[in-house]
Image (tube, rainbow, N blue to C red):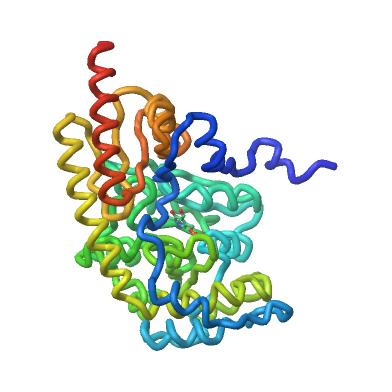
Amino acid sequence: MKGKEILQQMTPYQPGKSAEHIKRKYNVDKIVKLASNENPYGYSPVLKQSLNNFSFNFEFYPDGYATELRSTLSDTLKVNDEQFVFGSGSDELIQIIVRTFLQHGQHTIMATPTFPQYRHHALIEGAHVTEVPVVDGKHDLDKMLAEVTENTKVIWLCTPNNPTGLSISKDEFVSFMDRCPNEVLVVLDEAYYEFQDPKYDIDAINQLKVYSNLITLRTFSKAYGLAGLRVGYAVTTEKIARQLNIVRGPFNTSQIAQKAAVIAFKDQNFIEETVSKNKIVKDQFAQFLKTINWEFYPSEANFMLVKTPSSGEHLFNFLIEHGYIIRPGELLGYPKTVRITLGEKDDMATLHLLLQTYNRQMLEQE
Ligand SMILES: Cc1ncc(COP(=O)(O)O)c(C=O)c1O
C-alpha cells in the first residue's frame, strides 16, 4: 500500500537514542541532553507539589474546550475566549494550520534554516514551499515578501528563530505586516517568547487588533518545562480560530496537560528564575566561545547556534562520548554548526572544558 507520492521523498522524524543506550554504549554515568531546547531547570515547583493532590478521572475524555486553561490565559492576555486554539504542543497547531489553509497548488513561504515542521506538513498537504535564506541568522523579511504570489496562502515567521536564535523587532514586524497582503496568513511562532529580551516583544496579541491575518503560536514546552505533556496554544481572530477548531481533533489535549498548564502559567516566579538563569549561562557561554575564537549567533532564546571548525557531526560524535547530546547543524540544514541548548551552570562549565579540549585537538591537527 503506497501513501501520498510526496511521502516517498520524506523520512519519519528520527528520535535520538535513549539515555540508557548512550550510557551503555559510551560507558558514561550521566547524560546531559542539550539537543531539544527543553528546560534544564525542570518545571514549576508549585506544580510539582500540587500533582500529588489531584485526582484525575482517566476514564473520561478530557474537556475538549480546555475551559479552565482558556479562561486563565484569556484573563491574563486580555483576549476573548474564542480567540484560542489548543494543541498537543505547538507542533500539532502547525499541522492544524497547514491542514486548514494549504492544499495542492498553493504556496507557502518560510525562512531557512527555521523550524522544519512548517515545511514538513506543507509538503504533505501538497503545497509548494519557498524557503528564503536567513541573513546573519535573521529572517530576510523583504525577500520573503518579494516571493509572495497570487497562490501564497501562509507565511511562517519564527521569533526568536530556531535554530539561529535571533528575534524580529516590533518595527520590522509592523513594516512587514503593513506590506503583506491581507489575504496571506502570517503565522508568528513564538515558542521561545519568554526568553527574549522584552525589547523584542512584538506585542503579538495586541497586533491582532490591527492585523486580521495573524496567528501567534506559544507553547508550554520550553520556558514552562512541560514538553512531555504536549500543550501549546494559538491566539488569533475568532474567525480563524473557528476554522482551526473544525480541523482540530476534539480531545487533543489531555486532562493532565490542561491542569498542569494552568498551574504552571500562574507560577510566573518559575519563569522569571528560568529566564534569569538562562541569561547568566548564555552570557558565560558567549564569553567562553570568544576565548576559543568560535563564532556564534547572538541568541534571544535558550539555545545557541555555534560555528564549528569541523563538521557539526564531528563535534557531536566527540561530545556524545562524554555524555553530552547536542544537535549537529547538518541535521538543521546548516553545516559546520551545532545548536546547543543552554543547560545548567555546572553542566555548561563541563561543556566549556570539553569544547576547549576539542578545539585544542582541532588546532593540533591543522
Ligand atoms: C520554533 C518552534 N516551534 C514549535 C516547536 C514545537 O514545540 P511543541 O510542539 O513542543 O510546543 C518547537 C520545538 O522545538 C520550536 O522550536
